[in-house]
Amino acid sequence: MISVRGLAHRYGAVEALRLAEWSVAQGERWLVLGPSGCGKTTLLHIVAGLVRPSEGQVEVSGENLGRLNAARLDRWRGTTVGIVLQALHLVKHLSVRDNLRLAQYLGQVPQDDARIADTLGALGVAEKGARRPSELSQGEQQRVAIARAVVNRPKLLLADEPTANLDDAAATKVVDLLSEQAARHGATLVVATHDARVKGKFRERLEL
Amino acid sequence: MNLASLSASYLRARPLNTVLSLGLLALGVATIVLLVLVVSQLEERMHRDARGIDLVVGAKGSPMQLILSGIYHVDAPTGNIPLSSVEMLSRNKMVKRAIPLALGDSWRGYRIVGAPHAYPQHYDATLAGGRLWEKPMEAVLGAEVAARTGVAVGGTFAGAHGIGTEGGGEEHAESPYTVVGVLNRTDSVLDRMVLTGIESVWRVHEHAQGPEDEADRKALEEAREVTVVLVQYASPLAAATLPRQINAQSELQAASPAYETARLFRIVGVGVEALRAFALVLIVAAGLSVFIALYNALEERRYDLAVMRTLGASRGKLFGLLMTEGVVLSLLGAVLGLALGHLLASALGGWLEAEHYYAVSGLQWRPEELWLIAVALGVGMLAALLPAWRAYRTEVSRTLARG
Image 1 (cartoon, chains in turn green, brown):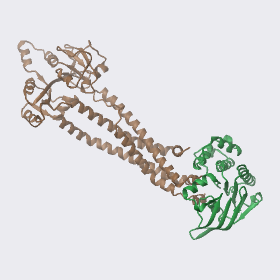
Image 2 (cartoon, rainbow over the protein chains, first blue to last red):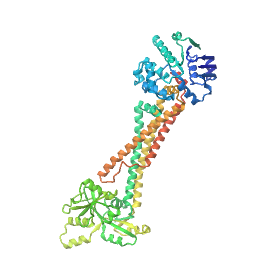
Image 3 (cartoon, chains in turn green, blue):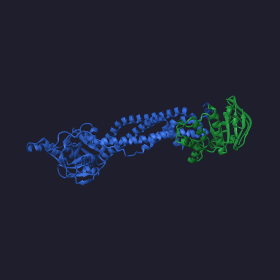
Image 4 (cartoon, chains in turn blue, purple):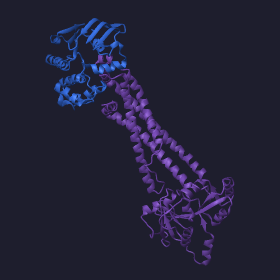
């Protein structure tokens, strides 16, 4: 699913990431662990095709990302990758349902209300479809962010610090939800975190 | 969901900015639409009223006043001229047709015009009912006069001295008119006229002066006058000599409608241009308002734009999103402005009609309005260009790393 070789990335003169080799099989659940500033987020962004690495080769789901032009890379990301961000970043003025519809529109997949309802239902927020993000609790917003990431049935689900600022119970719940959703859609899950509490939830771990 | 609905949702999320930009744009467009409608319809109407009239001859005074009173019937006449001048003009070989008009009275603000049948025939007027006047004190109503007063064939009325819109002065109750005909609408000055024979105007005023005996009556008859004579040249060469000939006479003045109308529009044009410039300033201000609104909003939207990139949006799509917001705003503003402009023209038209001036219709559409939409669209797109470029250059990784 993911194959990384000789990867390095620099921001100016500062090296942010170096990774000789990393292979992830389809359907696996990985934890990328390390302290702040070790390059976890950079790795996720490279794997998602948001950043082109300074060196090395990255293949995801059979595509060599270095060979895709910008337009194809954007299209590929919209259909293949789902991303859950630490700060969630739901679009405030859109309803929950429209946040998911936005993902379908930008991912260039058919806008399907039934699929949106099914996705929200699977995350336990079916009745919140008409609400604005500001009208939801933190936990509900977390579920909607996951729903937005999986509504296009991506093959790869990435989560960047999803448990930051959460208590133990909430952190466990979020990781469980991500795992459930990845399993439900047969997606590979990669969670980047510095949070050692969730270490036990993952068998495959990459320490940076 | 699409780019337009997404843009619209962003605009709805900032109602104050959106309303301000829309309001400025709509006001600018509406002002220009109003000017275009009023000026073009006024020009059309004035050209139609002056069609086939090469020269207006009347008493000495302001030539523009002579034209305004003799053709358009919107000003007081410069005075009267002797009846003999009509005969003199009719005999002149350079004159194809001379139509004398006698003014002085009005009825409910509409001018009573003494004229030969050649006057309505000049405007191709047809009768909606009844017949043209044959005897003194018979009157024919223009279409608007009949519609507004509700008086039909067979009705009677008394004129009042003076030709002001407020209805004039002393009423000539002792010399009532009988309506014998009503004209169809001609979209000319005739619609606002009460037509009668010239003899009727003389009779009303001679009666008012109350001749004591036969000698007085004869003296009054000999002193009969008309107000203006509308002249059509027999050949274009007449334009070079006839006005000079007439102006050389001590009592008469000749004025060219083409020249005086052009002069009038030059004078009015300064005000029109000033208003047009003001409207353009409003449109430019609207463009600035759109620019400031979009540019300021970029800061609070930077995460949204970055998230959209993670969801698969290309840089071009973000550029398109901001440009669409500019286009949606400018199109909405232009449409609102067009509607407002036409509404204002209708309101102004209603008031002008009530005051017996030229009516202006808000239901007419002019080709220039398409240009206005294009200009508004251009302003909106120009205003959105820089914000759209900044959105295009959104650095996803760095933006998301910040928050």
